[in-house]
Image (cartoon, rainbow, N blue to C red; front, side, top):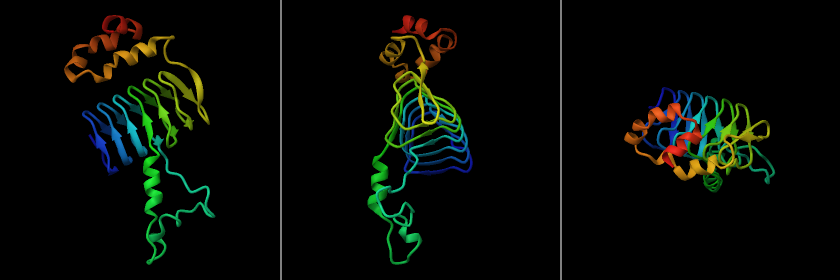
Amino acid sequence: MIHDGCDIVNSTFGAYVEIGAHTNLAQVDMGDYSYCARGCDFANVTIGKFANIASNVRIGATDHPLDKASLHHFLYRSASYWDDAADDADWFALRRTRRATIGHDTWIGHGAQIKPEVTVGHGAVVASGAIVTKDVAPYTIVGGVTATRIRDRYAPGIGDRMMALAWWDWDHATLRARLDDFRNLEAEAFLDKYA
């Protein structure tokens, strides 16, 4: 489901994906069951399955050329300034290679930012307003500016067992059949039953 006012360029979506209103996506691959709320801005990112992304999140924010004489986008969006100048295709190609990666079953809180080339591991949580500049380990909760580890999401060993189970690869019918256990069992009990 794609809500009103979205701008989507060169992006792919799995099954049961929802894109919130007024979201901008460019070069985004979003896995099954993932969603983002309104007002998000993603560029050059691969998002796993079952990602939960709150409103106003920015992932893969484009950057400026720090090593040049100017930071301004007249350097690479030149056609907007001069009739005889082309945009810098090499700059845009470089940006597209600097992909962020969001793992399966993640939660990205309201207003968080995740920089290019950062990986947020499976099951990780990024707190609201955090600015993530470094990789986040699976099943870790991070927050702050710049984001640092707050704590692990589960007791030791549970995250590894959850990744080995990889329930996010179960088919739609299996998810439905096990819905009551998803709702009612704590993570360790769920693993004991299905791993």
